[in-house]
Image (cartoon, rainbow, N blue to C red):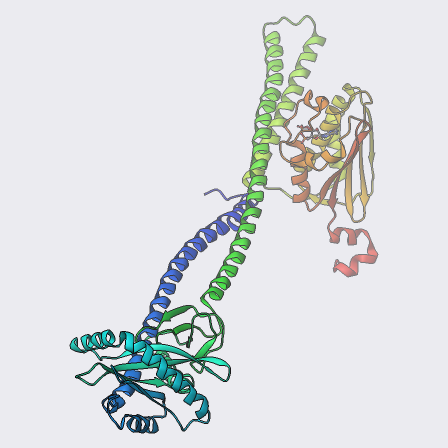
Amino acid sequence: MAKRPRSERMRLLVTLGFVVFPAAALIGFSVLHLRSIQRDKAIEAAIQRDFQHMMAITEKRMTRKAYEMVDEIQPKVPCAYDSDAGTRLQAILDKHPEFAHAFTWSKGKGTVVRSQSRYSNAGEVQGEGEKLGSMITGWFDLEGTSIVEKLHKLQSKGERPYYAYPDWVNRNGKMVYQAMIFYPVNENKAGIGGVIFDPDFLQDKFFPEMMNTMMAENEADARGNNNGHSEAVMMIHQPKEPPLAACSDWDGGTPEMERKLEAGFPGLMLAMKFRGTTVEAIGQRFLRTSFLVLGGLSLLLAAGIVLTYRGVKKEVELAKTKSDFVSNVSHELRTPLALIRLYAETLELGRVPNPEKKQEYYCTIRKESERLTSLINNILDFSRIEAGRKEYDFRETNLTELVRTTLDSYRYQIEQHGFKFEEHIAEDIPPVVVDREAIARSLLNLVNNAIKYSSQDRYLAVNLKRSNGSVKLEVVDHGIGIARDEQSKIFEKFYRVCDPLVHNTKGSGLGLCLVRHIAHAHGGEVSVESEPGQGSKFSLVLPVSPAVIAADRPDMKQDVGVA
Ligand code: ADP
């Protein structure tokens, strides 16, 4: 299998790194994101379900507990007609400090109320009791009979005949919640007895204890089977009011879910949330991370798109230069072939008038075939380089001799083109390890260009000299020159300056690309100095091996270990 050129591999890596990877990551991330949104929705729904479930259980337990407390005293509550009703009510309160008031009402008799006398604020509580008595009388005288009927109906259904009613009383200038629970007394006459839970008992003992037990069970549940939410906390309050009571871990903040209490403690709401955070905060943290990841990936993708665009643009340019190359090369092949054929046919038919003309035709045929050979050699060399198969035959070479012989075979042609030709070849050039053919071809390419791209001022110089441990081969002309911004591009494959003067000259755009490759293969460099309209100087610099330099300079021999 053919080896992929490095630049192509690089482009592939860049495309992979900047386009395919971020695009794949983006798709993957989006899928994960969707899944996690789905999961989050499921989690949110599960949390809501769990919270609702926990609050429903808490409500149920609170009601049951409150009712059980009332169960204890319910049989002891007298009828208002009983002469010792007051004493019996007082006895209940004495035994049960959790109740602030106890009362009994009978149709036609009115209400007997007793209040806790053991509290420090007994006076205030007493006042509450009196107000309560007149409120109950007014209310039950009107609706008592129908309330008793409703309570009996409950009883016939097997339920407790209890009814809870919320009340707010002013204590120390603050409205506090009281829960009144009442039930039917006296089978014969319509009568209702009831107790009122003390607000302080509810706030400080009853509610916190119930909620703490619930949360502790939930935490144990969460540890056991991962179904509960160990970070959940609960409180109880009146709508839009701060907590009346809360579990011991309650840390303030807005609740996630609320439940309106109905049976035992109407008028209050249970509320739940996560400790230290909210579902919204969790969501926002997730959203922030998502934005950061998405932003990073999008930036990578944008960079990838820019790089791909540049790559594609370069490919399009290359495709264009390649097609120019094909038409240039076809043209370059056709012209010498046509000339060779014409002259050969003329010679074959014996239509040449004199021996001088004959000689001229032979000469043209030779020159044109030489041009063809050099063009084909360039193309072959280029294709070997592109395929990574170009090999050099490096040998120690006398460059002075190589440059002279190469120029000798070309000198006639140069002078025939009317060029003033100068050679400045230094005699002290040390032997250099090069591929003879490659260096000769580089020199011919440079000289050929100097001839091709000169118009009026036909001057050509070839200099060979030493320069800082290297050998420098210069080809100078006074031709059309090259604009500054084109100077770096002319060494690229197929590149030809977009100038009518160049356009009218035949060429393949491969010569300088080959020269640069040859220079690099020798560890050297090729460069150009040029001014449009003034001419150009191409310099091919080839390094001289340190051993050779040392051999040349006795003072350096020791440093490089040459004997
Ligand atoms: P070609 O000569 O076949 O077009 P080259 O690779 O040798 O291809 O040169 C590339 C381009 O560099 C040329 O098309 C020409 O525009 C410019 N160039 C090369 N040598 C010279 C020169 N001596 N003077 C002016 N322009 C030159």
